[in-house]
Amino acid sequence: MGFSEIIGQDRALELLRRLWINQRHPSFILFLGPEGVGRRWAATFYAQALLCPSPDAQEGGCGHCDSCRRVFRGSHPDFCLINFSYQKAVLDKPASNLSLGIDTFRQAVSALRRTPVMARRSIALVDGAELLTPEAQVSLLKVLEEAPRHLHWLWVANSEDSLLETVVSRANFKIFFKPLDAEALAGILKEKFLLDPERAGRLARSSSGSLQAARRLLEKKGISAGLGNQATVRSASEVYEISQRLARFRSYKAARGQVQEFLDEIHSDYLERWREEATPRNLRRLRSILEARQNLDANLTPSLVLEYLLLELSDR
Ligand SMILES: [Zn+2]
Image 1: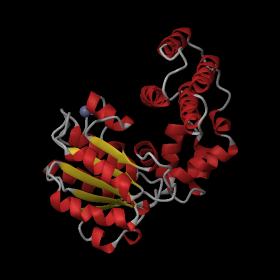
Image 2: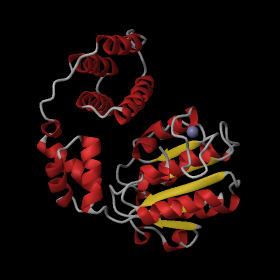
Image 3: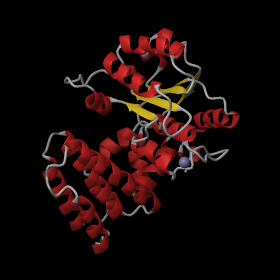
């Protein structure tokens, strides 16, 4: 766990490590580079490190304490991931899907301005900072002047050019990420998607150094094709355990938010299981949970989503 999970970005990793080891934590850092090369991962690991109660001197966050897990799933009280899902959750009125507006930004600021609850710091991670409206970007300048020192801003963006110059000039630190080289990308694909070396290499070469692009290509071709025909073992006890956890929603009146939280919870459990044991079965289950989450976001009835998920999980 920790910083060494950032693959194929030696220079960025070195900078991040140096920042961590020196324990000088700037209040505004830019993570810059194309999509799908590890920028958000790096920012998340850094946030984990800053909030973890027992971090490693070299590696940052321990990765498995309550705090680290909460950062990972986005439920840490002192951590705010600002993206479209956040915008949708905090605004009463329908929000634009094209930009992150000033109201969203203000919500995050007011939530984080108070004294941190679990840690000594608060962190706002903006994923896709180029999507912030100019108005929202400019308001950061004011926040930086007024905000308490415990608040740290991590902005993930495509490039400096996609942000306002005045904002870029206020950044205390910039970390640049480059497209992954084909070898590093193939390595990730082999490990995370269980592809054979030849297929991983081919896919890596047609993905312009972006894991995101590789993932899209895989999905287009039907990701299951990559998993081969390995037989999957169905574990009765595991299915039982999930159905027990689902049982508390059996009244079918569970609020959408509660179900979302539940799905995020089991998603993070399964992600961990998959990291420990990257079997096709674990990957399928992880995907079923993600699908359930998407269906819920697409406004399907929570009870239906849960029923379907249970079926999926017990069948495979
Ligand atoms: Zn930790």
